[in-house]
Image 1 (cartoon, rainbow, N blue to C red):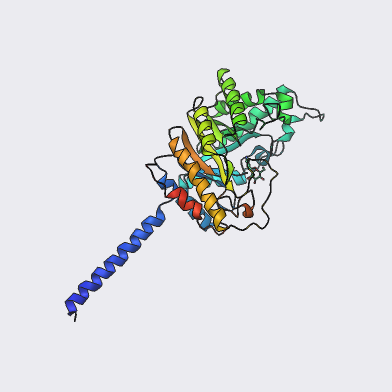
Image 2: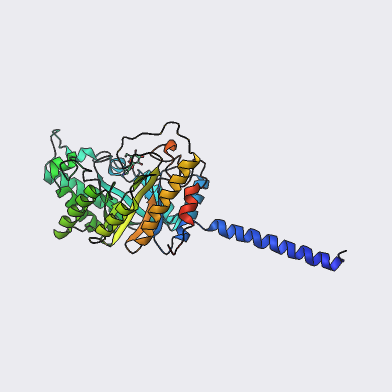
Length: 361
Ligand code: 9MR
């Protein structure tokens, strides 16, 4: 039988164990992806307006991520739909969320053929704007945006997706290219550098580890740099799937790009559960595809393979950003299940695979 004294000691020990246990559990809970990757690279997420206004989502972002990209709100067409109209509200909200929480902001994106300020390419008579007029407008746009967020944006995706995947021309045959040739790329970097000489300036593209496109990106950046264009980083978007790209292709691309730049960001990572990949705006939304056990295993394995390659290249990779917070936010639709958190913001098998890696591997 326990004496009064033994009973009290027993209760005291039990209580201490319980309290320590829950404190440990809390400490464990407080560790996010950004913490386990602190010796490798920052971990980012692309956000929409809901993500930075809903308290649960804001808390999840603060726990897991230390870099943010605006999914759509800083694109030129959203910010500057007409020559004399600017819409800052969404971008400002995201920038303020970063400022208030000490989170780094990647600027996305100054020049892209989609969601672009198409008005810049047309003069007052409805004819294609001359180079002189177009570059004057582009300079003003880039200077205004870059200077406004200079205190919080540390890296800009200056030009997005200017190269063609596999067609006969290395350059994407966009209106921008047809009217202004590759000078639009050179000028965009020049203007961004004028506006913020300390920002890292990225060329950003998808399917960047496919050998044909990789070489096109490499050749273009090399040529630009030789002409004095201030490209300081390459963004590999990383819209992947559960089967590809292979670790070998990603590794080879990172090695090749590292010859040219000392900053590589994985800017738009997701791993969809079908065979499509890339950033094209037409894709299958998966309809009612369920997340089965075998898909979850394939996805976790692909994320693990990719992160292993990224960790091996930590000398040159300084950020890995997921394109959206949870499956419910994904531009690919919830039924492609491409992210680490499901539509209820719960971590998936892939989350634990990415998080609990073996640092000696
Ligand atoms: O995720 C973005 C989606 O909400 C937009 O509708 C789409 C078109 O503007 O752009 C998506 O983001 C793209 C990114 O800005 C550039 N690379 C490809 C991304 C997916 O299309």
